[in-house]
Image 1: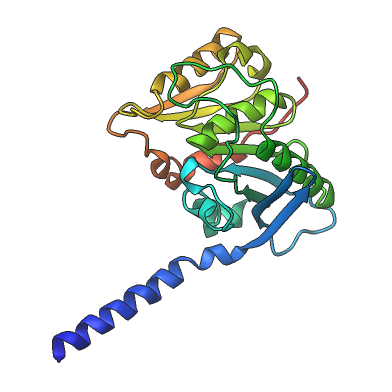
Image 2: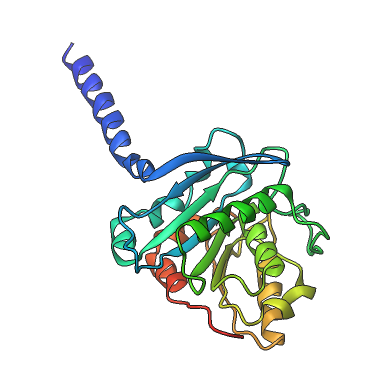
Length: 258
């Protein structure tokens, strides 16, 4: 009986701690955006107070393939929690948008397993909807146009590269994680501060996808950087976002005239 009671207490304690650990999710409202193309679920963080003379920054967060769906929850699995940390929210005044891509789609319709890929002529529907939603939020909340950022992991890393190529004069900085892009578009984004990440042991998305993009940008006069993890494979994003220096780096960049 004593062992059973100890077990019950342990289970209740675990669930209690789990609930506490998930409290940060309550900072992000559950919303959905609909247009003629369909419905896009999204989570949105708005600071508790935005003064009339303040212009908040804006972060677009693109999740990975495993977090696709319609539950409006899975897209928070990786990375977003770190942006909701007290030290980050306390230092920066920002809005964060985390849309959820449908299971049948991708942020950019390319094959992740290939050694290279070309940017599709047409933007994917989920990314187009995310842009439309983002534009409306930026206008509604009087966002600072010099402080619009994007980051994403895996499928979202590919989406990050695609997004900045489609809007090369829009984002102040980008942080793609274990993704890849179209190297022939590097000249379009050479002016954007970019910090890319990849695990050297990645067999799902070749590390060369990130390396080649960064090298192509450098050849075009840019100063993109890449951080490679010798001991990690594809699942490298926790190390990226849990190191808040990377989030600080993202916010440290302000867009200037090009």
